[in-house]
Length: 126
Image (cartoon, rainbow, N blue to C red; front, side):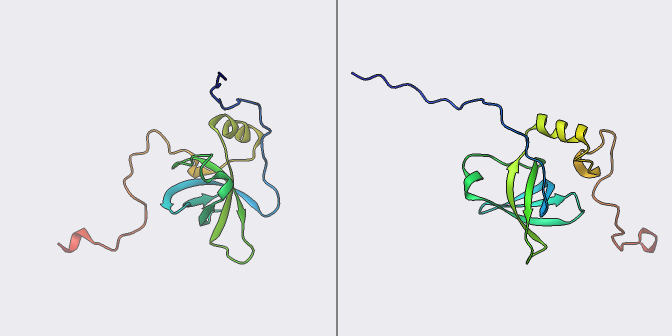
C-alpha cells in the first residue's frame, strides 16, 4: 500500500514587493463582499478594490491589513489588489520610508468618537 503524506505549506522566504508606477499602498477599511473591499490609499483617496482570482482563495484579506493595489487609468475610484503584506513586511516598509500613512495605526490614547466634521446639529437651540 502506498502511504500518503500530508501536504504542508512551505514557509519559504519571499521577496518584498515594492510599489511601481501605477501602483499604491493602501489600508483595508472594510470588506464589501463578492471579492471586493474598500481601501484608504496613501494618496488620500478611498477606492473600491477587486481581489484578483489568484489571491481570492489563497490569501485571506481582513480589515486593517496593508495591501498593494494596481490603479486603473480609466476609473480613479477603483483598483485591483496585487498583494497583501504581513506585519513584518509592513514594519520593513515603514523602516524603509515607503509607508508613512497617518491612518496606518490609531493612537492608543485617542478617545474621539466618530469624525471631526460638523453634524449640523446645534445643541443651544434646544
